[in-house]
Length: 409
Image (cartoon, rainbow, N blue to C red):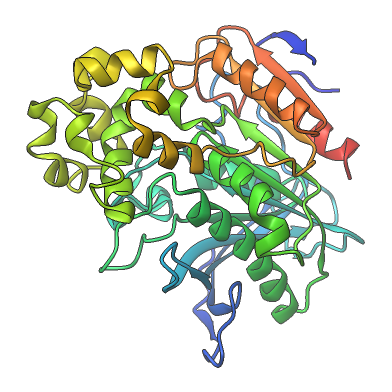
């Protein structure tokens, strides 16, 4: 088994642009239908190695065994209010070479079982300009999410990297941390992958792994909760959570800077009578809330808002969070937060949770509590904690994730 350069602390219980665009007529569109698909670039294994080099700086980078062809896919889904939604994603289909890691000509990988690694990214912001698919185009580093997904495509997995719902829609902002929006984005993404591969004459996806970093972990676990009633045609082999932020109370009390985005998004969905930012936020942050959360991406958000509850919230709300008495003092807000706390429905899907000891977004104690609750709800959970790692443990955990997926294949 490979090992990263960082030591694991403990295992816990518990370029070739092809102007090919396929447009699918929107006739009686169903969730997961592919609206359009464009082949944009192909990578040899060596080019994948170069592409992921910056992501794995300081870690043992994997060498790609396959090349990959990348498509931009638009697919059908549904907003939480029932309106149709179009989501953009990057689909990465592995290609094979004769001599392994070479820069030679590629052909379609001939795996007898296609496995899907659907990766939901971390928070980038509410705006269309913050969509993850812009990151590599503009040279921004929000998390190098395409490089991450390409690293798995280079190991033979079909990769799928969606932008969040609302991104690309001039009339909408992202329904931030909405469990239903995240679940439908992910589940309809699985359906879209199947249909896209079929249109390409590829082998069908036989096994599905849902992965997510931070907010993406919230979306992946929400998909497990919603699957039986929204997409019973979708099977899930396992979930990988990289520092997943599944508990809404922990999220707004530990990753405090995103609480204004949550307050804005939930007020827009439920109205101020159910989720009122005025009882949560201090006046200095409340008065310009709408402007501030809709003018900057996650980097600006992290620099603008305070990182402590006492710096952002009104004293009474901060005390209720600290004392776990939000339900008693703010029952409507608590009801909404409970509705969007995810993962504990009893879905029974096996899970791998990876966590850094120095995470400042979701604290290790909160993650451990989630793991215990998830196991109690019936899931087989493996929990890895990495010494001296912060929130982004994707690189430190890469080989462990590969091993875990192979075990569950």
